[in-house]
Length: 161
Image (tube, rainbow, N blue to C red):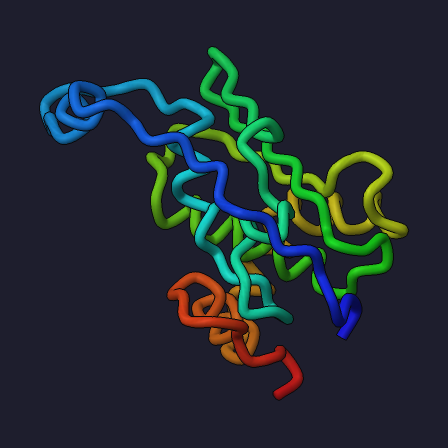
């Protein structure tokens, strides 16, 4: 385990107003995707090593999500330690959750926050290479771990388990 005693933070979730939620339920309207909506999709992803969510560990934060007018989404996440061996897996979980949740028209880029990981460049390259992501998702064991992180209920089984 890379970080045996991570700091746990309380939720900083901002509730959406009733009118905004009613607009989102209107299937006939094509609404713009914003950073809060992206955050809502990823905040409950479980960390692969701990029985906590990415939000609780401050791995994922609302202020680290940018949605551009050109329908690009940029997410930066911060591993709990600079040598986190799970950083690529965390990024893959975020990517899979968004692939399953967002319209295909959006381009999503996922990065570790600058200076937050010892192998920042390599992790970023893996997370944003379509062929590498597709190959990773063909691995049944790895996909099982990813799905475990996405469904809730504590830490997912390790990829090597």
